[in-house]
Image (cartoon, rainbow, N blue to C red; front, side, top):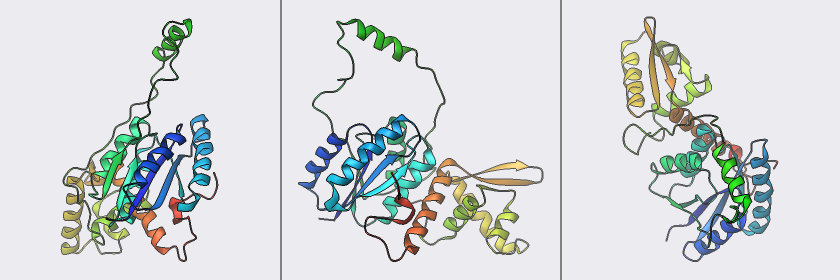
Length: 273
């Protein structure tokens, strides 16, 4: 049986997360644990950080790795999950959806389809809705009124890969293009500018044709988009392209971090909670 890694987002239910983890230990040889938590400076973030500290203590034996994430940011969630899954290839990665908000869970599900070693699960409580007042009390009507009057802040979309599940070659030029765009704030004015950033000569026909094909491939895969601006086309990362580029930057930092301190994975881990 392959060694297993677990990934948990810690929100409001640390006990449920822990009980689900203990159940998994009966059937999987778990060798590493990632604990994702909300780094936003709001009440949700405060609860998440409080609860992750509890789990860090309880799971000390596994040297859990704390990872800060913004659960409402596509780039933050997707890049973090992609980097973890890429760094743990060859192992079974069990991703816990128990405490994830819907947008985060949907993003994780999309990214996990790129990795056959990823499995999703959720710990289901004996009962749910315990925060809802008794329907026979005045508090129940007040509760419904508050919920019915919630107002929209924004609409989030979850981008999917355009084609296939094997998006990128490990050391291919596609990764170089994505990470270069990422490090240049996400876009290039033209294919010529992109080629220059990559250290090549855009006036050479062969070079230009090669990188045009690479950009075409990335566009089909839903990782970049092109926008006509005058005589040239601006090349821009999509949300998914940005997230994967960020993930490869994190992976590069992880690989160059030597020696590693136990319980830390370069930029994936956080020094303060």
